[in-house]
Length: 143
Image (cartoon, rainbow, N blue to C red; front, side):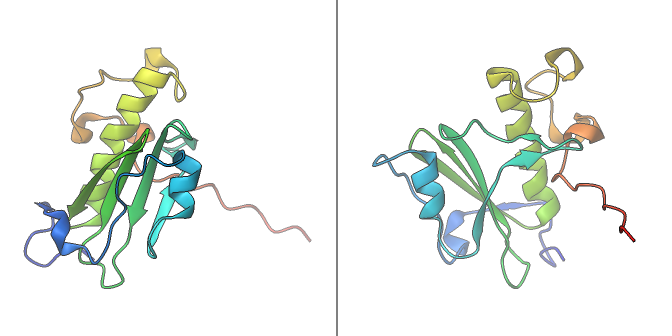
């Protein structure tokens, strides 16, 4: 479910009950351990589950509001954290698509560079196989 009035908008982070903050006392693994309740690190992205971020230097975390009105993302980069809140999971995931593309281009830790569009490609123009949360195929039941 999206925000009933503003599903495509980005909101000020003040609408979130709590969010991760800058942390220069450790690394990304320490930051992950200290994420507030409701936040979770996202380690893989896209159709083939490529690395999202470059742990422990770069980590992406998602927040899914219990009322499903204000999903958010946090991007940790060597202790500096950028937090963004959105009117829908789709808008949050589109912002994550752009982060993933940028990191893959810079770190070369995702799909083959020759397959990727330009780093500044808007989320709507990123090919579908590079977008969205990784969802492994269901495993067949064994008799």
